[in-house]
Length: 134
Image (cartoon, rainbow, N blue to C red):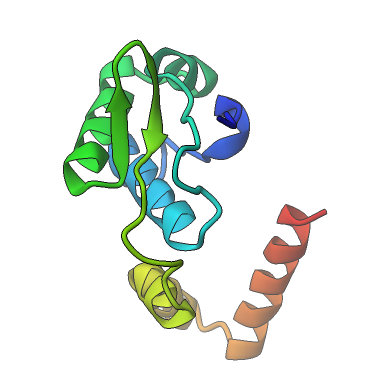
């Protein structure tokens, strides 16, 4: 089964105001919904992920346990946690967009408060998108 390196898979920001375990949960949900994390893929161990991001292992364990309770992850005795088998195909784009809608609304609100135009915000998103895909 394929394994993804802990440091490459997730972006966890302790200064974002969003609890680390929720950041991890949301990222796993999105990666599974988009099909980037497929059934059977091994996730980094709690220890490896905690070390890679300098966070408490209990934080990672909490996120993994909550995702397991949701049915997204599967615990395997003596082996790494894996993505659980999917009951359906990759979610359509509309459902995936719904997952990021709250962040988009907050971003738009912040841009309006800063009196930034739609064009300026779009340019910023384009720059960030390109930087992430270099």
